[in-house]
Image (tube, rainbow, N blue to C red; front, side, top):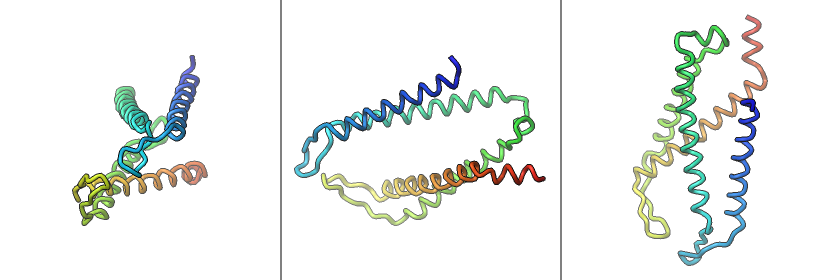
Length: 162
């Protein structure tokens, strides 16, 4: 089988599993463990699906990085593709670190709070969660901007004119 066909099949299988899981989550009954606070019965399925997807994504990312480093040993990737991979990697990691720092600074001073079931969450963990939530927002906006710039071809056109 061609790699593209395998990739499409894997994508369709993942989408199918996710759609079936969320459809079951949203349509199958509820349990009332804490009075009026409804808890869907299939919450565990969604949580385990997310754990599985995060672990699979992390594993594939590490594998891809190792494979990429091993295959490009001794060659200059910018010479063959015209893409300055080192600069792109540096900008990506810099943006990630900056977004987490901005999120952390914006979340400083959060107070501890008590959930409805009596669980107390410390102010430190609230700040960490806020940092990652803000970071997700910043990185999502950056990724959206990168896709728009890539689709318009602005950088490609300016590179050709030179």
